[in-house]
Image (cartoon, rainbow, N blue to C red; front, side, top):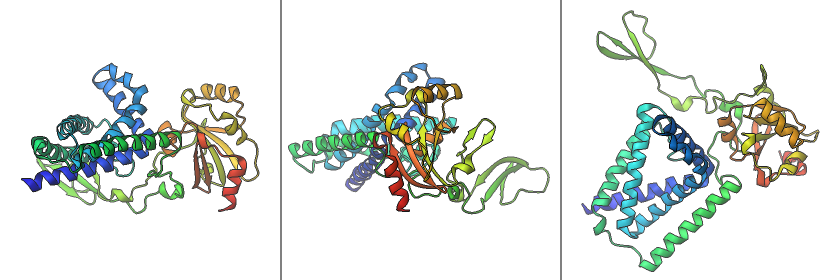
Length: 364
């Protein structure tokens, strides 16, 4: 039993630390996922969940840092009674969350490991079931764990870790994530990621006379009822499937990925920070080295009013809000593309000067 309880302690501790650090690296992404959950629950369970949407970023930081700190506290054996109670409460809540998402197919990516590791809803649920069992062992044996450090040293470690990771989260919010796990990270060639890396292979699940069969090719024999087509090589599927840029009835996606474009991304005008609007405006002036575009998910009338109010005389086009939030965790944000390759990205707090952009292009 000693081996089992120690295994549970280190396995859960390490997993919580890893998962929490991934989220602390990108608290804005975690907040986006929390908003998705709140909106689903507001529709399906109770409207009061909408109240939590404005607090999503704050809750993202709290939950992410708490996850790391709990992992550290568990490994060093700090206040095991309190730690085990909080762990149990969290895993019960998250198990319900992932089951609800999986069973009702509401949120297709739980965000358990941010964008670093993608899990299907059922994979997330099974992961939480395993954690529930391990945390159950920890909770059962909570009185038998011995602290690794003195109380004072343990408190210094826990409090210090809390402050450190809160600062990391705040920095990531005010700038950009330290590590970008998304398909739009610097160096990626977007047109390549918009294509399958290999032919997709499917298994066709069919039913006939009450028996279920699987086929690698669609059966030509009659009498079969189609159940589902299951992709067997999902790793070959395109990593970017929803990048579309338009204006009116015209599609500008190919033009976006041709030549050198400096893209100012504005998710929604009503949520756009104006702190660095003067520096952004300077990027809209004509430059022979690049073309400046704005991509927005706001409606035509809203953006027209916004650009006139802020004197943004620049071509603008429309794209899906989720795509824009994935491109850059900043509203507004700036992305430099050259023939479809992501050259650089900036948070609005780090908005570059035109000379900075040209200097980067000169290095290519």
